[in-house]
Length: 79
Image 1 (cartoon, rainbow, N blue to C red):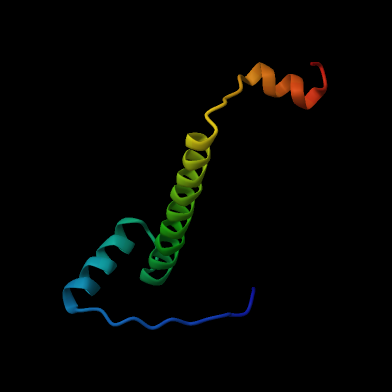
Image 2: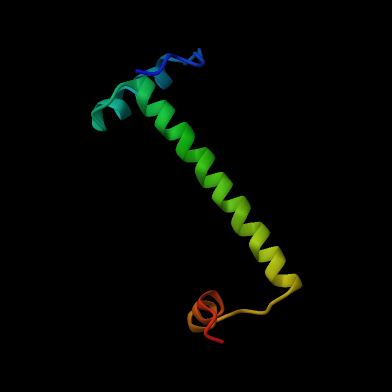
C-alpha cells in the first residue's frame, strides 16, 4: 500500500457531518473515501469544462471542421 502523501482535516457542523455520513452509507464507503472520490471527480469535471471552453474559443477563431473520414484519411495518409 502506498504511503500517505497528505492528510487533510476539515471541520464540519453537526448537520454537515450527518449528511456526509448518510451519503457515505448510501454509497457503501467511508466518509473519507466518499469525500476524496467526490473531490477528485469535481476537479476532473472542472478541468474537462475548462478544456471544452478552450476548444470552443479556438473553434470561434477558426471554425474549420473535419469529418471522421477526413481525419482517418489524414492520419492514414490515404489523401
